[in-house]
Image 1 (tube, one colour):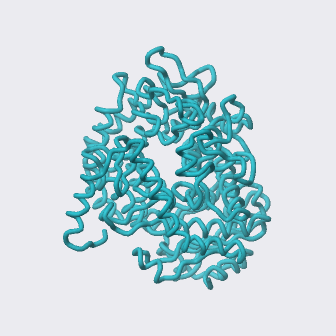
Image 2: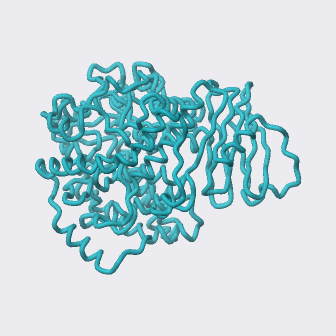
Image 3: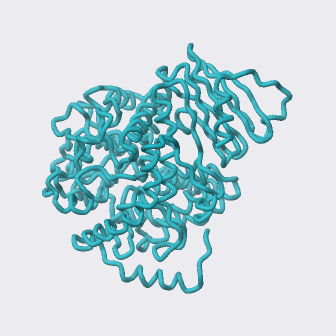
Length: 566
């Protein structure tokens, strides 16, 4: 954690007491301030805009990286053999450039490095920070941990806040995903560092979960949103009309997404408690997790349409609006195998969630579908949750196929428009038809009429999907697991992934005939492999290069040399 001058913490606490709780006037002032600050960022964005003409990946010089405590270059990708190869290379690099620009050093807002989802969003956001921490995990996990610490540092009592900015603090919370992110990011740390981090954050997350029980749990044991804005999907048709002039009272609903996120948090608390040797507490968290999962299946599953829905507690009726929230229990491991298969069928249906860019925020065939924010466009954060659900239930081939489509869409849009966006068109390779709460003049004035640009708050997860899903990289201390999931459309292509944080380069050739071959390279040497599609490779990183072997020629190895020379 970064050091700071004496007295800065005192001033920071004074500013915290002076912040105004979120209201219409406060939000308006915050947005206007963000618009002014955006001009300052243009000097940096020009680096990426120049790439429109150079058509080459952006690299950040070491002195610029060091200014924010980064000691290594970002992961790098090189692809050959596909029509979209250049788009993958450019988009992958651009995501990390934007990610770095949105990283903030310790300041009057927080005493650790913290992250912004994009230049128009000046503040520390709860679920944005959770997803951004996962993107940083592959570059520098210590930044990811700082991003999570910042959310906890600016908490209000035991409540983690939706957003905290220079002059404004929220009265709400947001999807409780900090615990999930903490456990996932900490996996890349040595065990003793994991334990130290969990000792630091476990009491805070324990208290936050107890706050949720007291303030966001119905007597029936299910969870609700205090306001549509807590959900992060505020203008979804399950909550409001397009311009938010009419909002439902979400306090009278039990929500499948909120309940599923709490399941993930309870799992995370159990994992932390187990690491800390608190076996009784771990068992209690697991029992709460299992009980909540049972309640979600009992009350929120519709056997007619085979989806999870909100339920109106006054009438007992389902709010039958098929949105991306219906899939979040899959991410949390809630459904049994039969229910999971039903959700997978919805994910593959073209009139469901199986659009060309998969996981639209409303199923394509529903009458409420439109290309306006949470009413149809694809948001990478919840799409990532859907991919995680498929992996959790063993649908590896489908997860790879859909992750590839998600990544390709984002990178191709960047290739033509030179922007990374907040949300995407589920059908078309451009953003021209997308709207932002059409008819809402306040949002149009402060955030524009379409998706935010330079936004990697969760769109950066496409890079995470390349590494985690397509290459199938898992690194636990010294053990590397490689589980490639490239789809058949990537056959006869060459992929090289450079991971400086692990001194590792993976060269992979997607061979025709459902096989992969490749080379693992570290500073100590090489290890060659060949895998039938769908199988895993497990290697100890410290052993690479110790076996005396002559690596056979591999079509992708020359790409590794290109990356090393950059």
